[in-house]
Length: 205
Ligand SMILES: N[C@@H](CCC(=O)N[C@@H](CS)C(=O)NCC(=O)O)C(=O)O
Image 1 (cartoon, rainbow, N blue to C red):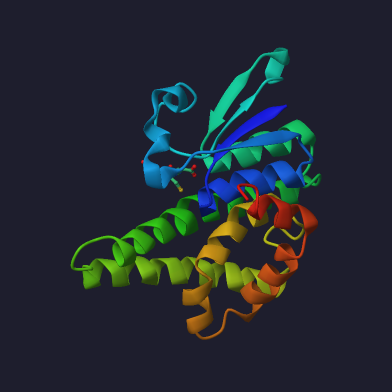
Image 2: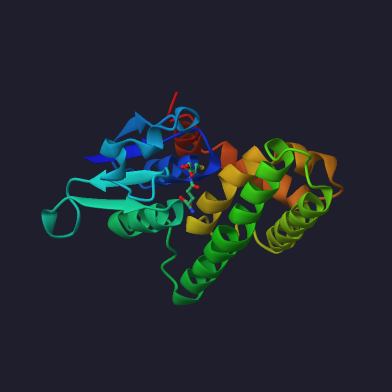
Protein backbone atom coordinates (compact mmCIF):
# COMPACT_ATOMS: atom_id res chain seq x y z
CA UNK A 1 0.00 0.00 0.00
CA UNK A 2 1.15 3.49 -0.85
CA UNK A 3 0.22 6.58 1.16
CA UNK A 4 -0.20 9.62 -1.10
CA UNK A 5 -0.01 13.10 0.39
CA UNK A 6 -1.52 15.54 -2.04
CA UNK A 7 -3.79 18.46 -2.83
CA UNK A 8 -5.86 19.50 -5.87
CA UNK A 9 -3.08 21.17 -7.88
CA UNK A 10 -1.42 20.05 -11.11
CA UNK A 11 1.64 18.76 -9.21
CA UNK A 12 -0.64 16.87 -6.82
CA UNK A 13 -2.79 15.41 -9.58
CA UNK A 14 0.25 14.29 -11.57
CA UNK A 15 1.02 11.87 -8.72
CA UNK A 16 -2.52 10.49 -8.32
CA UNK A 17 -2.99 10.06 -12.09
CA UNK A 18 0.31 8.13 -12.25
CA UNK A 19 -0.68 5.83 -9.37
CA UNK A 20 -4.06 5.20 -11.00
CA UNK A 21 -2.56 4.54 -14.44
CA UNK A 22 -0.05 2.13 -12.93
CA UNK A 23 -2.76 0.29 -11.00
CA UNK A 24 -0.95 0.71 -7.67
CA UNK A 25 -3.03 0.57 -4.49
CA UNK A 26 -2.91 3.85 -2.58
CA UNK A 27 -4.78 5.88 -0.01
CA UNK A 28 -5.07 9.63 -0.15
CA UNK A 29 -4.13 12.05 2.61
CA UNK A 30 -5.28 15.53 1.65
CA UNK A 31 -2.70 18.11 2.71
CA UNK A 32 -4.40 21.51 2.53
CA UNK A 33 -1.68 23.87 1.29
CA UNK A 34 -4.07 26.80 1.66
CA UNK A 35 -3.89 26.12 5.42
CA UNK A 36 -0.11 25.50 5.30
CA UNK A 37 -0.57 21.87 6.33
CA UNK A 38 2.48 21.00 4.20
CA UNK A 39 4.62 22.76 6.80
CA UNK A 40 3.39 20.63 9.72
CA UNK A 41 6.09 18.70 11.54
CA UNK A 42 4.41 15.35 10.77
CA UNK A 43 4.48 16.08 7.03
CA UNK A 44 8.03 17.48 7.06
CA UNK A 45 9.15 14.01 8.20
CA UNK A 46 7.88 12.71 4.85
CA UNK A 47 9.05 15.61 2.67
CA UNK A 48 11.44 17.99 4.48
CA UNK A 49 10.93 20.56 1.69
CA UNK A 50 7.33 20.97 2.85
CA UNK A 51 5.62 20.60 -0.52
CA UNK A 52 3.10 18.17 -1.98
CA UNK A 53 2.92 15.67 -3.56
CA UNK A 54 4.77 12.97 -1.65
CA UNK A 55 4.26 9.24 -1.30
CA UNK A 56 5.32 6.61 1.19
CA UNK A 57 5.48 3.15 -0.33
CA UNK A 58 5.37 0.72 2.57
CA UNK A 59 6.71 -1.97 0.24
CA UNK A 60 9.51 -0.05 -1.43
CA UNK A 61 12.78 -1.52 -2.73
CA UNK A 62 13.85 -4.51 -0.63
CA UNK A 63 10.37 -4.55 0.94
CA UNK A 64 11.26 -1.51 3.05
CA UNK A 65 9.24 1.73 3.33
CA UNK A 66 10.36 4.49 0.99
CA UNK A 67 9.30 8.14 0.83
CA UNK A 68 9.39 9.84 -2.58
CA UNK A 69 8.60 13.50 -3.31
CA UNK A 70 8.57 15.58 -6.54
CA UNK A 71 5.67 14.81 -8.85
CA UNK A 72 8.03 13.78 -11.67
CA UNK A 73 9.92 11.37 -9.43
CA UNK A 74 6.61 9.87 -8.27
CA UNK A 75 5.55 9.28 -11.89
CA UNK A 76 8.87 7.56 -12.61
CA UNK A 77 8.66 5.52 -9.40
CA UNK A 78 5.14 4.31 -10.22
CA UNK A 79 6.14 3.53 -13.82
CA UNK A 80 9.20 1.52 -12.82
CA UNK A 81 7.40 -0.32 -10.02
CA UNK A 82 4.50 -1.34 -12.24
CA UNK A 83 6.27 -1.71 -15.59
CA UNK A 84 3.66 0.62 -17.12
CA UNK A 85 3.88 4.03 -18.86
CA UNK A 86 7.45 3.41 -20.08
CA UNK A 87 7.59 2.23 -23.71
CA UNK A 88 9.27 -1.11 -24.30
CA UNK A 89 11.17 -0.03 -27.40
CA UNK A 90 14.48 1.64 -26.54
CA UNK A 91 13.86 4.49 -28.97
CA UNK A 92 10.40 5.30 -27.63
CA UNK A 93 11.63 5.03 -24.05
CA UNK A 94 14.22 7.75 -24.74
CA UNK A 95 11.55 9.85 -26.46
CA UNK A 96 9.26 9.41 -23.46
CA UNK A 97 12.03 10.60 -21.12
CA UNK A 98 12.83 13.54 -23.37
CA UNK A 99 9.19 14.70 -23.48
CA UNK A 100 8.78 13.98 -19.77
CA UNK A 101 11.73 16.30 -19.03
CA UNK A 102 10.37 18.86 -21.46
CA UNK A 103 7.14 18.96 -19.48
CA UNK A 104 8.70 18.79 -16.02
CA UNK A 105 11.41 21.40 -16.58
CA UNK A 106 9.82 23.76 -19.13
CA UNK A 107 6.04 23.49 -19.08
CA UNK A 108 5.30 22.85 -15.39
CA UNK A 109 7.56 25.43 -13.67
CA UNK A 110 6.76 28.16 -16.22
CA UNK A 111 3.07 27.52 -15.70
CA UNK A 112 3.48 27.83 -11.92
CA UNK A 113 5.38 31.14 -12.17
CA UNK A 114 2.92 32.62 -14.70
CA UNK A 115 0.01 31.53 -12.51
CA UNK A 116 1.46 33.10 -9.35
CA UNK A 117 2.39 36.33 -11.12
CA UNK A 118 -1.15 36.58 -12.48
CA UNK A 119 -2.96 35.62 -9.28
CA UNK A 120 -1.03 36.62 -6.24
CA UNK A 121 1.68 39.21 -6.87
CA UNK A 122 0.51 42.71 -5.91
CA UNK A 123 0.58 45.11 -8.84
CA UNK A 124 0.85 42.15 -11.27
CA UNK A 125 4.23 42.95 -12.83
CA UNK A 126 3.10 42.99 -16.45
CA UNK A 127 6.48 42.46 -18.06
CA UNK A 128 7.41 39.41 -16.00
CA UNK A 129 3.97 37.93 -16.40
CA UNK A 130 4.04 38.43 -20.18
CA UNK A 131 7.48 36.84 -20.34
CA UNK A 132 6.47 33.70 -18.42
CA UNK A 133 3.12 33.35 -20.19
CA UNK A 134 4.98 33.66 -23.51
CA UNK A 135 7.44 30.96 -22.47
CA UNK A 136 4.60 28.72 -21.33
CA UNK A 137 2.75 29.15 -24.61
CA UNK A 138 5.94 28.46 -26.61
CA UNK A 139 6.52 25.25 -24.62
CA UNK A 140 2.89 24.20 -25.11
CA UNK A 141 3.09 25.03 -28.83
CA UNK A 142 6.05 22.69 -29.06
CA UNK A 143 3.89 19.93 -27.50
CA UNK A 144 1.00 20.84 -29.82
CA UNK A 145 3.24 20.46 -32.89
CA UNK A 146 4.43 17.07 -31.69
CA UNK A 147 0.85 15.96 -31.07
CA UNK A 148 0.10 16.82 -34.71
CA UNK A 149 2.73 14.25 -35.74
CA UNK A 150 1.97 11.50 -33.21
CA UNK A 151 -1.06 10.53 -31.08
CA UNK A 152 0.95 10.85 -27.87
CA UNK A 153 4.17 12.69 -26.99
CA UNK A 154 6.38 9.58 -27.22
CA UNK A 155 4.30 7.94 -29.97
CA UNK A 156 2.46 5.86 -27.37
CA UNK A 157 0.82 6.82 -24.05
CA UNK A 158 3.56 7.30 -21.45
CA UNK A 159 4.96 9.13 -18.42
CA UNK A 160 5.21 12.24 -20.62
CA UNK A 161 1.45 12.45 -21.20
CA UNK A 162 0.74 11.86 -17.50
CA UNK A 163 3.14 14.71 -16.66
CA UNK A 164 1.55 17.12 -19.14
CA UNK A 165 -2.17 16.52 -18.68
CA UNK A 166 -2.79 18.15 -15.24
CA UNK A 167 -1.00 21.34 -16.34
CA UNK A 168 -3.04 21.53 -19.57
CA UNK A 169 -6.21 21.19 -17.48
CA UNK A 170 -5.23 23.93 -15.04
CA UNK A 171 -4.22 26.23 -17.95
CA UNK A 172 -7.27 25.44 -20.09
CA UNK A 173 -8.52 29.06 -20.15
CA UNK A 174 -5.30 30.52 -21.53
CA UNK A 175 -5.10 27.68 -24.10
CA UNK A 176 -8.75 28.20 -25.13
CA UNK A 177 -8.13 31.93 -25.66
CA UNK A 178 -5.03 31.36 -27.81
CA UNK A 179 -5.26 30.62 -31.51
CA UNK A 180 -4.57 27.05 -32.63
CA UNK A 181 -3.61 24.32 -30.16
CA UNK A 182 -6.03 21.97 -31.95
CA UNK A 183 -3.74 18.96 -31.52
CA UNK A 184 -3.24 19.65 -27.82
CA UNK A 185 -6.98 20.09 -27.29
CA UNK A 186 -7.75 16.83 -29.16
CA UNK A 187 -5.09 15.02 -27.12
CA UNK A 188 -6.43 16.48 -23.83
CA UNK A 189 -9.94 15.25 -24.63
CA UNK A 190 -8.62 11.74 -25.30
CA UNK A 191 -6.40 11.62 -22.22
CA UNK A 192 -9.14 13.11 -20.02
CA UNK A 193 -11.53 10.35 -21.12
CA UNK A 194 -9.29 7.61 -19.66
CA UNK A 195 -10.91 6.05 -16.58
CA UNK A 196 -7.64 6.10 -14.61
CA UNK A 197 -7.07 9.76 -15.43
CA UNK A 198 -10.62 10.65 -14.34
CA UNK A 199 -10.09 8.87 -11.02
CA UNK A 200 -6.63 10.40 -10.51
CA UNK A 201 -7.82 13.93 -11.21
CA UNK A 202 -10.47 13.53 -8.48
CA UNK A 203 -8.30 11.72 -5.94
CA UNK A 204 -8.77 14.35 -3.22
CA UNK A 205 -12.53 14.34 -3.78
N1 LIG B 1 8.64 20.46 -8.33
C1 LIG B 1 7.72 20.03 -7.32
C2 LIG B 1 6.86 21.20 -6.90
C3 LIG B 1 6.06 20.90 -5.68
C4 LIG B 1 5.26 22.13 -5.25
O1 LIG B 1 5.67 23.27 -5.47
N2 LIG B 1 4.11 21.87 -4.61
C5 LIG B 1 3.26 22.95 -4.21
C6 LIG B 1 1.81 22.67 -4.50
S1 LIG B 1 1.53 22.44 -6.20
C7 LIG B 1 3.37 23.12 -2.71
O2 LIG B 1 3.26 22.19 -1.96
N3 LIG B 1 3.56 24.36 -2.29
C8 LIG B 1 3.56 24.71 -0.92
C9 LIG B 1 4.74 25.50 -0.51
O3 LIG B 1 5.64 25.66 -1.32
O4 LIG B 1 4.73 25.94 0.62
C10 LIG B 1 6.88 18.86 -7.83
O5 LIG B 1 6.83 18.66 -9.06
O6 LIG B 1 6.33 18.10 -7.03
